[in-house]
Image (cartoon, rainbow, N blue to C red; front, side):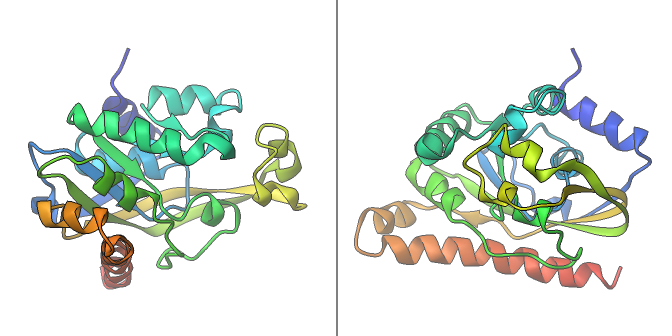
Length: 240
C-alpha cells in the first residue's frame, strides 16, 4: 500500500494542483512536531504533507470517519477522526500524545470544520480552538515544536453543492453546523502557496507555567503565536 505522502502527492497531481512552498528551512527535524494550519478544503491534509515532505497524522472531524468513501480516504492518508463530542477532547489528547511520543508529526486545524462549511476567503483565518496548545503542553515531550503553516489558494475552484448538510447530520448528530439547510461546499485548489511559520518551542519553563497559575497565559500565548504567524503569512501570500 502506498504511504500517505505518496497518496498525497498523487492526489495533487491528479487534481492538477501546483504547490509552491516558502521557508522550508523552518521545518524542525528529528523532533516531535504539532503542525497547526488554517483550513478551507479537504485538500489541506495532502497539501500539508507535500509541503513538509513527511506524513502528518492529522486530526479530522468526527463525521469524516463515519461517511463511506470519505472514511477510506482519511484512513489512507493516516488521519485520525475525532470522537463524538462527549469523548472528543480526552480522546484527542491521548491519541495525539501517543503519536508525538512515537516521534510522528501530528496535524491540527484549530478552526475546526466551520470554514469548510461556511467558506472564508483564501487570506482569512478564523478563531482558533486551543486544543492543540493543550496537547503540546500536556504531552510533556522535551524539545517538542509547534509549527504554524499557512495554506493560501492563489487559484481555486468552488463546488457550491456537493452533499446536503442534513444528510451529514445522520453521521454526526451532535454537530451544530449540520442543523442548517443548504449544501456542503468543496474548494478545489489549482495553485497553492504554502508558507512555513516560525516554530514555537515548548520548553521546560512552558511546562512549569502550564502546571501553575499561569496555565491560561501560556496557552493563550502559544495559540496567539500560531494564529498571528498564519494570519501574517496569509497576508504576505497576496504579494506572491
